[in-house]
Image (cartoon, rainbow, N blue to C red; front, top):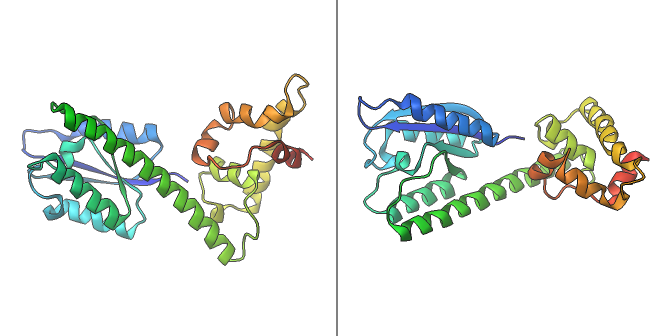
Length: 235
């Protein structure tokens, strides 16, 4: 399931045209696979605390009410031109913790201070880790919901993972027809390797991770890939 996101575009004067930065952000969101559900545009000074901006407050309300996973901006300066880098980063962390959302930036900020530039790279790495955690938690809670509803009494099979990726859905949203269609498609993919005498069956998982199922395993890195996974599927 793609991460639902909102875009925040801020300009400070009437002379600035938000269209250019907005196009960059939307292109970036598409490349990253986000599902952009709403765009928020605001004309206000960057030195104004984000939590005191009318449109940004509207954005946060929308985030809380619509299970939004990410807020995408052009760069860090669109978020907050604070008196110090630490102030801006603390504000980011405050919002992420309170609203369970993470920030992503389409462009790198221009940072002259080498120490702050290094610190920013660390922060970017933290953002990426936070994103992976959120995806993992969403998958985990999806499975818990299925078990509670009596729809899943076992761990998802490789077919569940493939169908969830193929149809861009959570496990709880998959239909029997989608699972069956996914199973047939997956069997065809796997048999290409399984029936090839030149391919070791114990290497099939590795080959699929690198080729046909690469994107699926990026979304579900813990999906099964052992020899027995493919043997059960084929037989």
